[in-house]
View 1 (cartoon, helix red, strand yellow):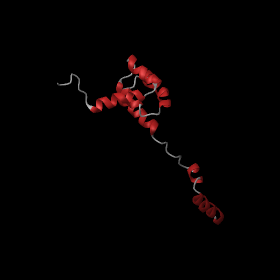
View 2 (cartoon, rainbow, N blue to C red):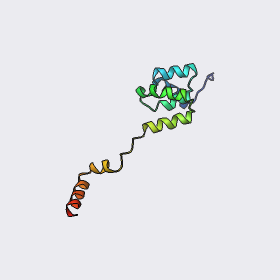
View 3 (spheres, one colour):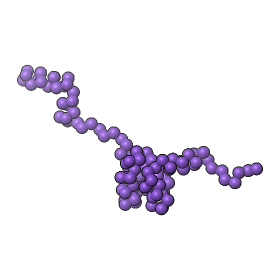
View 4 (tube, rainbow, N blue to C red):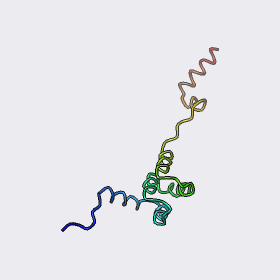
Length: 104
């Protein structure tokens, strides 16, 4: 007997991943305010951050690609500041600077 419904394993896995989303995101998908694609993109964030991003995605009517980009930027570590603040964190550099000051 041939099954009536056949889904790819990836389709089932992606759908199951939606169950890990924050309840507000799941509701937005059910209500049609978001697509499943938006939900999968938001799933890349911790659950406590998903609610904060939901309002931005819905109010700005972001596409799935734009949502993916937003999530990527939020997940990237922030670069360390350049300039005087970064130099002070290196004790060896501070020592060299102090030696130069004394010499000059």
